[in-house]
Length: 84
Image (cartoon, rainbow, N blue to C red):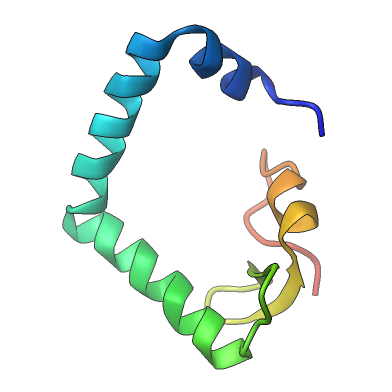
C-alpha cells in the first residue's frame, strides 16, 4: 500500500514524529480526546465488529462494520460521515 504525504513526512523526520506522538498522547488525555475514544469504542461494541473491521461512522450515533483499510483510506475533506 502506498504511503500518504503525512506518513512519508514523519518517516523521514523522526524528530517531528516524536513531537507528534507526544502531542497526540497529551491530546488523548483531554476531555475531548477521551470523549472521541469512548464514542468509537461504544460504537464498535454496539456493532460487534470482527477482527480487521472498523466501525465506520455513518451518522452521529450510527455506523456499520467495514474493512479497516477501506474505512481509513476514505477522504474526509468536506465529508463528515461515510455513506450508509
